[in-house]
Length: 513
Image 1 (cartoon, rainbow, N blue to C red):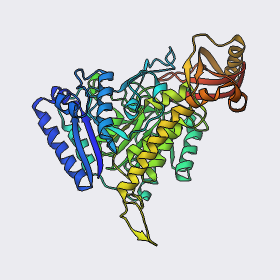
Image 2: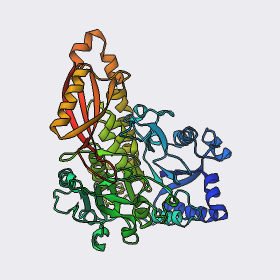
Image 3: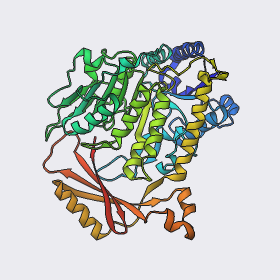
């Protein structure tokens, strides 16, 4: 039987809701019963309960805000039970995101940490280095309550949505609401063509938005490629120096169709901020989607980056996630496969790739399969003397395959590491020249070496070096800005250069989302 474990911190929930915590437990009981009826054996584990954690050979969490304690507790639970799905129940004031160090941290990228749930999906022990978590293996998601909430109504509604989900035909998800900032129209259209073989449905902001028609908001697939800001219930479009609101939490409230799946490239698009920080106590866009019955929301907790006319970074990760969902995967498997696919794109993960991998989170029950897939869960049949696999057997084989793929990634992929020395004057001059060609005003430069993977380190023996290794490489990130632009969030442009033997051999231009 398929197994799902829900982890939470009961003490933190009781601190938030007092006696009303009993209502949360009742909702979880309904959820477990609904899962059991589907053949999914679900258990609730409180990581702060000593008796429960003893059964999983782990230590209880004594400080709900402590990332290391939570990582070690969840590792103990997962390592003992090896469930098919793991759900984190609660917002960041119940179980925190992990505090991975942002490799791009600077005055132009002020996120000290790339906050997210990636380490919970990895076998590696607690660390603040993203480089230690490039090979996720676990199917996980987070069902958040409202950060800072005192009443459990919101969380109970989300739990009830997770208990009552139903699969729908793929065609129900093939007419997306796609919203893009005008400057990134090319990139968004490419994503849509890759997913739906057409890009005619894109809404460009400006001039369009944020008062979308109810029929548009009611569509089941949403792709949003706009600007986002910290502690904001709005996203923003862009055309030249114009940055109008493109999407509003207040406008979509009450208009979301149950079963909606959302992929958001915007900066802070999945930030679980405390609504009490705003004068009107408006919850974030991610929270509003989930309250409306969205099954899954995939977005970034911090500043994200993407391309203008092609796809990279946030563009690709969101595209891969939606592709998995459309092909019938569970939300959690779609997210994990997207992360693994993204991590294997090249031979080395540059600093933007690392941050992108760390910052995207899945909000929703990872066991939900929004799209009906003909082979998922099919009964065993005998044909010509050969038995086909049942649904649980297929799932088991997929989990083994995902485990192997995840474990192999650190063996073959290099990762960027912050260099102590600045880039050479020659490379610096080349970067600044490239910035001027693009009408950009250069700012700071960060330089990175490359941490070689295990397989390449073995191959570095003298007899194999010439046959198997590329020349030593490093990366340089030049932060720059469009001249005289004004915005809610400054339009930072990154030039990411790969250097080999003192020469720039490739250059990527990425824009802050």
